[in-house]
Length: 526
Ligand code: AMP
Ligand code: MG
Image 1 (cartoon, rainbow, N blue to C red):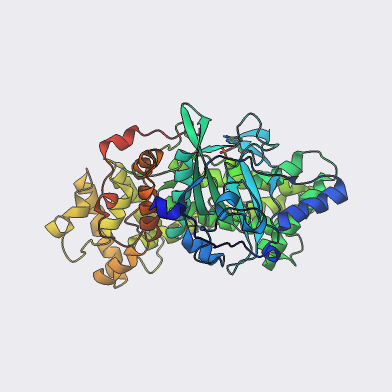
Image 2 (cartoon, rainbow, N blue to C red):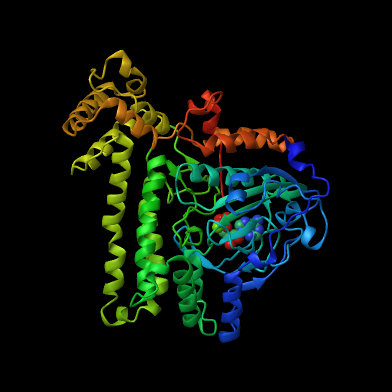
């Protein structure tokens, strides 16, 4: 498979039409440079990587970009004939691209970290696509002015995790940056051990983070408040056009980002996704999941689960994520204050009012997710408690998060909980009595809305996945890829595109994690 991926097609050459490149973020930077001598970043190029090879290709996404079937197969050359492999490694550019690397700042683990920036990300350009304009960004294409002490590289291990998880999240219907391709090179990269380099090409309408706004709020650079306003205007014009006529765009943007972030947090919680590094520089202004590092999906349910080995205090534990989302929104609001003049007169009351909508929006979004996961079609006040009590029962004895909800789809309400037909789900609970008591309430709640088991099962199977990217699955794909066999990466990519459908041959992926999975440690090192 990898041989086929990497054999060029004779006499075939393709590159996107130069006129398709819009590059509006790079243009905004030229504008802020001309107006206030403060660019948003610098024009930049990748550092060449030797002997790149495709590890995985996302043909579905390439199709969404309007690219032809053989987009990845053109022979190497220069200029317009430059191969997609060279371009998506950072070894070449196509005409019309405007490679660029941007500056941002952020709060890391709750502490102001000052300037960070695209230390290993390179925005190749923004292309006009049938799905709307999309930016293509490489991760790991070499050092930039913002690399600080880093080498600008990403290792194969973490790049496989990012590639697969971006697409797994997309498959789950969760807003995320996408992954177009994954390239490996034999170039050594030093982490705890020597590993090898890889480059992921990521795709999103914008990679602007909360940290971009924080940077220009606090940088003290010439015209920084004007640059901040220009950034808000840019995001509103291109990504939230419905807010263009708002009396105060910064306030309207904050409101919209609060809403999207509340939805995103509810989405994450509902599939047991733990991001691992929810620093403000890893928060997307579009409410996308961004920057996959030491993420994890819950196996046995522990609400305090910490997926990032570097997070000693559990700041980013699963059950803290919604609160951290709120914390990060406060940091964004703080950064936008200079653009919201009412704030000065009225002790920032308008801003606080907008922020506080999170306190209704998140629980509301979360209740809606739990209801869907339980197959409920009407809304009752006690539904939140019903979900919490199930989680409580799961936590005792750590019932597997994904498997419990999936098996609950087939729970038969006309039979008693202890009936053997209900054993698959009931047996996941250490405290059977707690499950039985809960199941009776569940039956009554379903009965009250005239729920029909078979229909409920169908509904639930559309929101409770069979497959999530558990650490051990990524780990097996990584181990094989490190030996040059990319087939498992490609298999998982396929599998996770349809996480709600049982797929033949993937029984193990639907099962419990093996014992050795507990020993896997993922950290910020990537
Ligand atoms: P992260 O925790 O991966 O979101 O990264 C935090 C900051 O460190 C960002 O500014 C990254 O660009 C930068 N960074 C992380 N790893 C590297 C690296 N290997 N080389 C250069 N910069 C890096
Ligand atoms: Mg980051």
